[in-house]
Length: 118
Length: 113
Image (tube, rainbow over all chains, first blue to last red; front, side, top):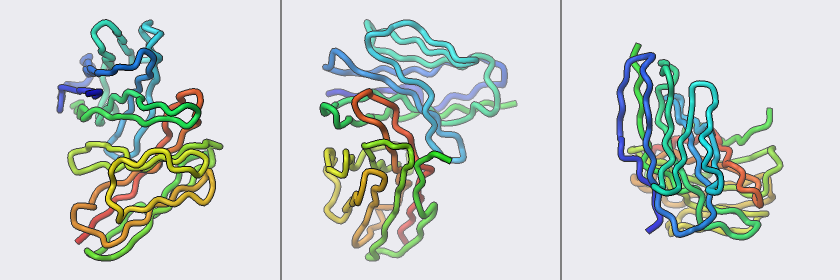
């Protein structure tokens, strides 16, 4: 079955530590997109990044970086020098069941709750 | 501000009642969604509409009826509320054709007592 697994339910780190959130997915599609979302304690869902399955180049945005490896079906997210404001639940989500010109649906992983302590 | 807005933010009601949650987006998107987030933070899609047409219905009870009067609105009506309906409901929108990300509203916390 097509699904996404975030094996780490909770992670706790001390500020300034680096932390990696794992995401492993299964898909039968040859072309697909992967997303990461952040849900801070205030509850909103914030889009972080989208990756195309054709593009395996790692991406860096400030303290955030993403490692996409198609061969292992993984799309991991690393926060460098973590800060208290990074405390949130992070969701990995592949896009699937695309209906031509009508969109598809995001299938969310279980989420990883990151707690960054001062 | 451009955004996805949903109302109300909180909804407390008794079992058996009927309630509605409204959603509007001014991002010019043509696809809208309803997601449900349970107490364990698990997010599951309920419905998706594209240009007012229902394209995804994820085995949601008939008590849930989405309505899309136009591309910018997708409302959710729930009949005969049950305790298990208690959750946070998120509306979202996206532009189809280019796999654009979903933009979410801030959620409606529904509590059924």
